[in-house]
Length: 417
Image 1 (cartoon, rainbow, N blue to C red):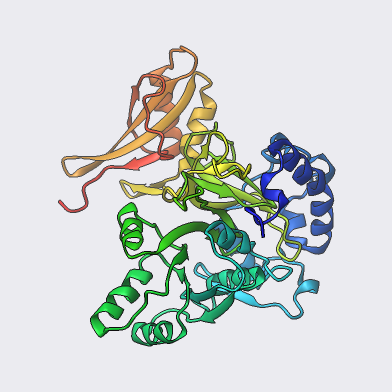
Image 2: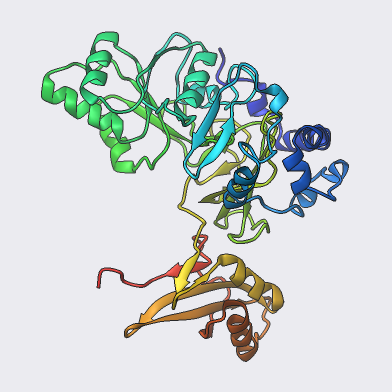
């Protein structure tokens, strides 16, 4: 194998965009014919017109709460799966609950690419400590490693002492699992006198790989990279390294996925660099999902990775986009803040800050003006009250002064007091 998993990773970004949007209309036309729930969700949409990001952005974002509701009404998949393709496949149940069918091919979650970028190669022995019970996590990485040509031990979760015993006997070169469980294994091995020095590489997901933890693994001789994955799409993005094996900034978006970053509570794409919700459209014929909101926050990074892969990069997982907040007994949703901004073109951006005034909840709508405009504070207060049914203050702030953290609602109440 060369320096890259395949030629797709180094093609021009314009070519990549053209290829994906060139096949999206036909893919969706066939998918809507086989998945009645998808057809209902996209009723009135002409698949033939979805040839650009601008056209795709006009479609509604499918939230997981909506998907769960449709699955409950029409079990198990809400009509979003092509059930003629399920023979010989697995079906998974993720928290929510949300049902997910397994996709096509030997590596439906496209995890092999992430293993390769982490330095893992055919013939490596992988200790997979992701769960195999009900949820797809274990199988996502299992299939990717085996598709790459690795030998895999399906360790699953828990039973730390048995996992340490197994790893000491098998001598795997690769750890695969959550970021912190490898430390649990290494510490347990040190206590019991077991040798786990065979671990040289790691691919982790399902939690934050803090810099201090990555550094500790490096001190123990293990190079650990991370990938960002979901049950619905598999590996969405992954880290890569420089020629010396050092992790490079950001995560490279996987092939065959259209990823957008939108303002939380809306379907509106944000500018590159601005934090927003990760929204994904895939090409999985068994489970065709269009503009599914993951509920995760991230941002597009400028330029391409120094490793030579040309896919766009994101900053990785940056928190959750679901900021629905109860204020004075009433729930306020980011969508309501977005509606206020939509009513007032003189407003570029807004952030609702929730605090305590004595023993009472208080809220303040902080507003950035658009292009030197002068927003009407009184009118904004009226919109805030009308749309949230709650009174609050409105404060004008300087353009560009609101934090770039994806928060539309910032709950600053001290719950420990």
